[in-house]
Length: 86
Image 1 (cartoon, rainbow, N blue to C red):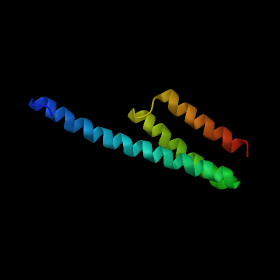
Image 2: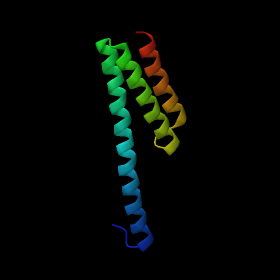
Image 3: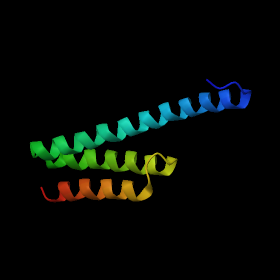
């Protein structure tokens, strides 16, 4: 455990940020699973709606710095490709 006041504060802030980042990543995974589930079910309209939500969540995560912009672009691309193949 840190003894210096600034180090203690840094630990607290990094824990808060880690929790926030984890929440965003979990949300991205959830919307991604919804898209994949709709594609598996063969429901094109639901897949397209889920893709819109997923794209928004992924881009927002990239903007916040939780995901790298190229990683986000790859995720969106793969999901869009799977929906367009339907």
